[in-house]
Image 1 (tube, rainbow, N blue to C red):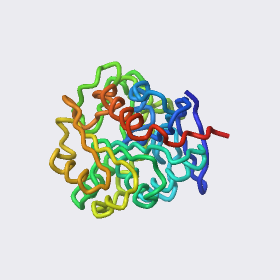
Image 2: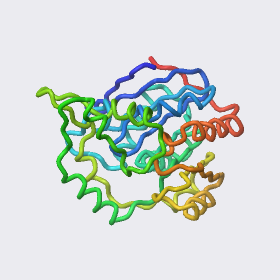
Image 3: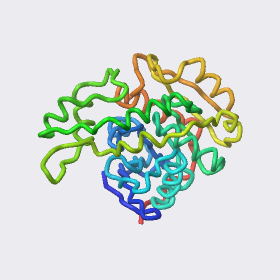
Length: 280
């Protein structure tokens, strides 16, 4: 596991290079999360070269000084990551916010990927969701006296999960940073919550010229099985699966089953896909 840093238009970005020599897979986390949420999925992906990107304002990537946290801004960073990491037509995988970003990049570059995987994410975002996130952005960021206290009080958003306690604790340990005054606070920029604007990309799904896999948790309240099936049917080559027992956070609830679905996509449908060219 190697940390990769690069800069795009003054924006510092961080990615975790998990190594490997197979098909390049680029993983995008959800809102207020970070690249290390994918640590538990990567071992189940098989023979791939996996990279996990910290979106701007999250994890170890820099905050956007201008407050540029639109889905379009994130998607442009994905393009920069693909170029900086020298990935040739990667499989792009996104969870939640990462699914929005992945789909935005995909519809803007309908021939640039080998496949797209959207994990518990929709193809549209409404005004009510935008208002809710703006309200969350107004709340003060949590502060803790120690990392141990921060980890003990950590809860994912939404909070429902069947992830093992040690998995949640490991995610939490990468969620916080120590400030100069010794207090611990989340790494992500709360201003990122207020920047999401409504969008609807459903009508663009038919433009995608590669396989699209939709994955949802059985108990997800973010996307219904009916909606996911409709989105899958709108694609030229779409497939829809449900991971049993999971809530929204599929990648920590059942990383083994999610990894298996992505691995099957790579093996069965992309056996001859181009590989990562490596990193300079």
